[in-house]
Figure (cartoon, rainbow, N blue to C red):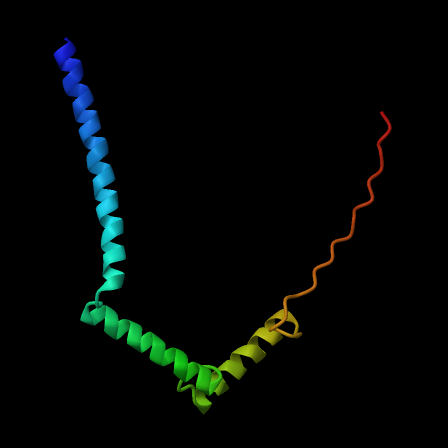
Length: 107
């Protein structure tokens, strides 16, 4: 009976240690990956993101968004203004709630 309990306890302990080791190995893999060179696909992806960031800063907006893009944006803005009653679409609307007048009912 005691031997059976010992085996149960050891299996629970073994699963807890296994889970902890798997989590630590996963975390350490991420940390070690920072110190060494990235794989080529990750490096290409990060290079493209950095390239897009510099292009968007230099152009001041959408990269390679020509006259057709600006025309589509202006059409969509006018459509939204027509649907929702105009106003500045770049500004969050002012919402005002009035306090309801409550009267105590006679019992």
